[in-house]
Amino acid sequence: MSDPQDAPIADSLIAAARDAMAQAYAPYSHFSVGAAILGESGRIHAGANVENAAYPQGQCAEASAIGAMILAGDRSVRAIVVMGGQPGDGRLCTPCGGCRQRLREFAKPDTPIHVCGPEGLRQTFRLDELLPHSFGPDNLDF
Picture (cartoon, one colour):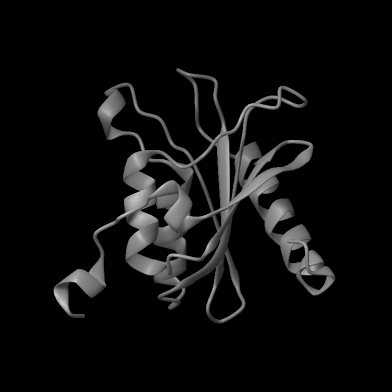
């Protein structure tokens, strides 16, 4: 996000993730997460975490956003914003291990993952920093 040309895209992604976070269904953990993906078409696809009383049946915000991306016809992730936590707490809400692998299916190793709190950007990683030595479609010659 250091390139000024990326600022409008990043601002739009952050706004979409913030809006998604506001719609999260988290009655058990009270930890709302929103995610927004920039697809190859330039469109933004958002998702929120959805909890379930049978805890393993919940869905992460990143998985929701990937589903929205697929339904809209995009097949690759150019960037993603993940937003969670409380304003000013400074802790990072990075994608869980399962979502890192889900992102690997649709993203390149150098895809930026912007981790935000409600106040804005906290840190940016590349996918290969969060999921080094990963297994993906290229391992299957696809």
